[in-house]
Length: 517
Image (tube, rainbow, N blue to C red; front, side):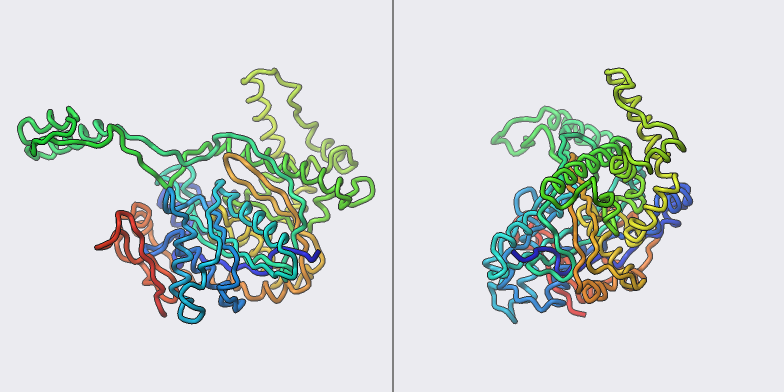
């Protein structure tokens, strides 16, 4: 069978960004810690006319145009997102709607009618899941059928104002072309997987007591000097059932269900889940590679040394080199290089050295966190990270977290940087480690193809990043709160959200259009 993998990638990011120095000044934060410690330079901020669907559609359109693809031949568009726009209708259908608007004149009104679309959600690993699924689908069709699948990632990584996660915000969308005989990256069918049900980061359906809302509104009215009609407060608070009397007030639910884009999270716990998940998935990948005869630990080079680049999910730019010491450690245990490291930093903490109680396990976790930091400061690991991880961080530093797209942004960052540096990547292997809170990790491998330069040379990632528009704190907050009604930069040559619940529409119905330049 022929190889299956990534033929091309396109990315879209907002034209607006908030400089991290300005953010630090705004929040009274330590810019050096954010920049030198976490690798943050700027965060991409969506404009008024942008949302998950427009960012995904713009990237997909870029991919279709660049590769001159007939939409009638696209068998599926699978979207990985944790920023869905609806609880039932897939955001992928909004993307398809926009694409049909643009391409129907040339390719026919129903040019996407036979395309399978769906959303996949598992926090930040959703797009990796969508790609895994699509790779299997393309492979099953065989090279003669030449199945074409597009994996889309689109997210707005948004945190509460003033929260500890606010500085990791970012946004963007992308599209990945999956087919036989790929020009960029072939992906063998070996996947290491680790899944565990944890609450490190999630977006719950929040409930608010309706009575409490009414009480607060009435109290605010009184404080502001507004006259409240006699007896109205008592009538409201009784939550009267349906009545034929016109004066009676009825509330359908005693509790209001509220959805927020901003998550509930435990940053320290999430970091531990990330590290543990990627390590366990790596162990699973390694055992499967040995079983399939692709790796022999007795004769082959250390597995992670075989990966010229290591591409991981980056919620912030330096997350990869902060979390990867666990894999680095596991891949070198019982080897002379690890003996030299332990002589320098001491033996690693082991769970059995701590009491088998919640307090003991917490003590072990703290000791393991400290030991991971010690590993990251050794010359061996710093050289390893500089050679294999550093180039993947560059674009993330300028955009911020893209949730499901962060791993693919890291891939593009590395490939374009290697192209610009004149590095010969063809024939080399890269390791990829996806992670999604909740929590799941997948480790897989990519083989760089001989046409990689042709594809990478068209990304123009860093050139496009340099032409964005900075915003100040006032605009940033108005966009975050949703109080701004006009776009900061008018849409041009892109899909845009033009209205929600316009006249004649159903409640919450969203409308989009292609805006010419």
